[in-house]
Image (tube, rainbow, N blue to C red; front, side, top):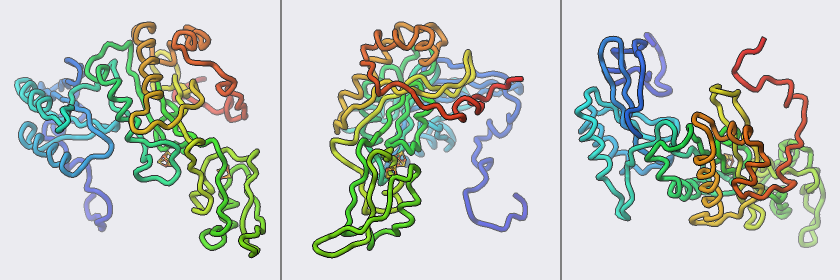
Length: 368
Ligand code: SF4
Ligand code: SF4
């Protein structure tokens, strides 16, 4: 970093380490989860770091972040960090600082009475749900992101606070199949899904879009140019072949006159059984287990009830350390559908067989 001649980008992350982390880099011996939400890391120098994990949200107000900073100033010399699942971790260097910190976090409530900083989300339980932009920000979502995630976390809250499950259970949401979330490899995944091809607003296509760009954007070559009569005027426009369209929304990204959102067409797909970990078995892709659920803002009752049922059956039926997909594979997917009460339909049959599917290495495990 010496003589670096730029002010672009963030400062080097090492400037933000708490002193105890900086002093013990590469010297940590082991770590333990003392109770849900509390970890200890022990160094060969004798130093210890106690971490208290509190649930956060992907979209936070400035007011909430200021409150987090105040808590860090009060208990942790101003240091805290965010996990990749948007949890907040407060770190202290003495055991006797842990309980006052937890008490302070748990005492802070929103005006409606819910916890601002619930402590939990570690080990064999459910941690915060990662999600994408949703209706608040992106242009192609088939469902909202923060809304269903809040509703799902509300029904899964007990499993955030305790560690009763056989193993980690990771839930993710991506609001369309472009998938900025990790739905391809999560134990349970909520995926926004379009079921109708884009509408063509021919009055605006030529004036708002570069038609060749919109055509080139389609991965399945479903779009071709067409002259269309609009109020007696011949307009340059496009035609979409619905049989080729896979509802990906790429054309809408390039051309706002090809909108894809549709009240009946859009909804949620539930996937299950994915994981990234190499433990016990290779990493797995998630599989579709519910082909469609409608968007039911603001509380998404069908989606949350389905997820809760899946988690409860897994919690009671899986062996210790077995991840969701390992459990389903051991008992057989047929039994999975029987036990969870989910309906098996032809939409769930995975008929995608491309050479890449079985020739590419899909795990980080070495094979010789
Ligand atoms: Fe936008 Fe799709 Fe990403 Fe959601 S998953 S933020 S809709 S691109
Ligand atoms: Fe092509 Fe995707 Fe647009 Fe369908 S939604 S026409 S597949 S780019």
